[in-house]
Length: 287
Image (cartoon, rainbow, N blue to C red; front, top):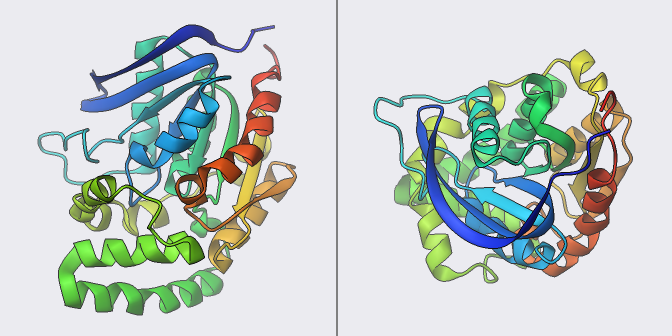
């Protein structure tokens, strides 16, 4: 059996060229390795407070996905897919020498994490996903109804202030009652600098362009844990429930709304930590 990846205590940041992209990444902590994949609308800074809380027991690897903040858009890059981002993550893990690892992803980051276990199972020890954006796996009428409620918010914001205003409106909606006050002003400004990447590359095209094979998900040979937010929007809650049923996992409820991992990291860490311990200590089938 393979032991969970464990590295000596360290804390650094760097850039690495993988899969035709230059990715900014950070490593901190000691213990079993956890890769955290950010969703659409933020960069890896969204995990900084959470990663700091986990670093005493885990080596936490975070990175800005291609085109986001400190990972520049590759020359000639005109579109993207979940699969492309999963390939980036797999190459990054192999390049820095950590696989197999536990992977955590939220929202569209959860889609990338799921694609890793389907196409790059050698780099994944186990998976924890929060509010996965698996909208293509839900009834089409339901998804259309949900987007019909969201579209006016986006359209009004774009009319008032372009993509940047629309990104802020979505972040505020995803933060729920917590609001964005807990997020550092400079960091939020950096996120909003990605507005064109968000709307021209990822939202909603990438999210609605990915549909994993349900049979392959059910047959995955690594443990998968699924979380939803206590204040989840209906479409996110439905997606989490669908995935939990597909992979035969208990659906765990985390405090707060969609962005609770950065608006209330202490509470979120209290929910995530035991799941990470459980998955890091498990042994994949055939290991």
